Image 1 (cartoon, rainbow, N blue to C red):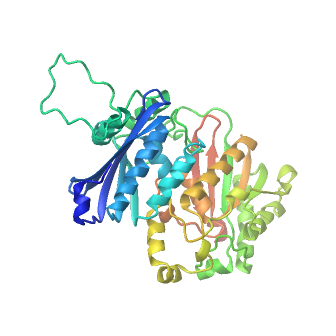
Image 2 (tube, rainbow, N blue to C red):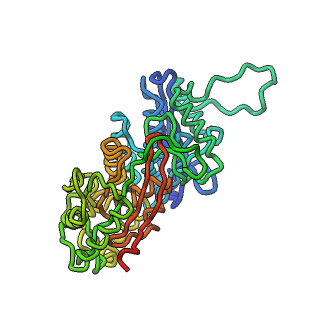
Image 3 (cartoon, one colour):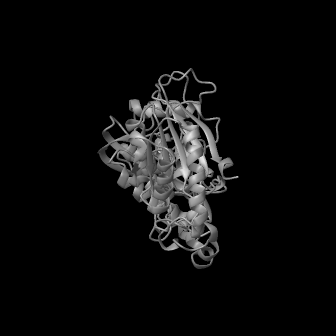
Length: 425
């Protein structure tokens, strides 16, 4: 569908809102999407709708998002707030829920690339009744129309036959997601998700033990330890995949931290580490401090490696700011944006969650040490604390700083300690 006439008048809005939706009648069934782009005044700048043939609700919702982002790009927008009543799409695109369904991954990647073209992209969940315009467009597409029916000028008679669902009947999964979202509607849009019968979720999906019913079974205790200091740490350089060793100070920190690890996890079952040398040497100090049996060797977990900072690796923040100002702004504004040649925060979160699930299955009810880097540990703690994206930029982790997370078989999680450095004093 053509863009709104305002786009032809050369108006290039800086900030816009994209409202998007999609649905299918049958899930899978005949499907369609709708998207609306609004100026910050509320004026409609563009509408997009289209029929998709037979597919699922989730595919239609993602397509609505993609077409809405394309429309915003066509209008020259610089900052975009996406509003959708699909909790699944909002949480996945915000990086808080994983994308397990293989059919959705290419769509999420496509949406992520479009989002990377804006300076700022924010995702917000809204109730369905506040997304009626996009719903009407999606409904019209499913009816094979090029435009939605005009809104009635007056309320229908009290005895009128109820209208059909705007975007088709919900699937059980989507209905469950809507119920969860409705229960959380009073919370901030940046709050982390509550587990529901949707396709995706965090590795930590349970409640807070201070108010939830008593946990069942023994928890997996993960003692999270950032590696000791390196030369890059002292110089405040991005150290992603550069395999640099610990400094003399870093080796001392590793030995001190090893004793603290054994104090909080006296029955250590395993020492798990990133494959990079600075972590392997820190992990070896834990083994040398007294680990026996299964914990006498370091277990390498590739998904715990540091974020790939690409062309920024080895540079200071100031150097990146001077050489890559636009790319840095986009990276700081969205977890979907990667440094040139590198990896986005969302990509780190996905692989860290994958690693956590493996550890939960392999070491259920036991105690393990996990030696990793700033970004993976922050990502794990963000999920455990049900925090938003801003958490990644506000938490500071010292070299050899120690955190403790317990997780139960019933889904409960308790964060015991964050960035403990008393052992370094």
